[in-house]
Length: 88
Image 1 (cartoon, rainbow, N blue to C red):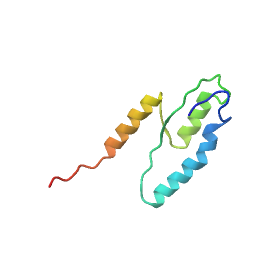
Image 2 (cartoon, rainbow, N blue to C red):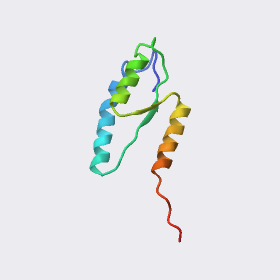
Image 3 (cartoon, helix red, strand yellow):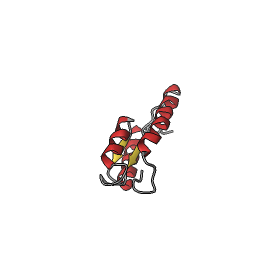
């Protein structure tokens, strides 16, 4: 998520309903859903970095300090949930 002038005035609040709906859909299908993100911004941005991060965490989003960190976290989570393949 990118903060700053020209960005949505409250992006975490805008995403929260979609995150909640995605979780409901996954739950109905008996699937887990992990959402990983990073927020690029500062406390001086109009959206306020800490407020946006807190709102995403409240929605159950796993936050990383950078987009590269988010990619590594997502890869680690996928790897941790991987099932071993059967050998023939």
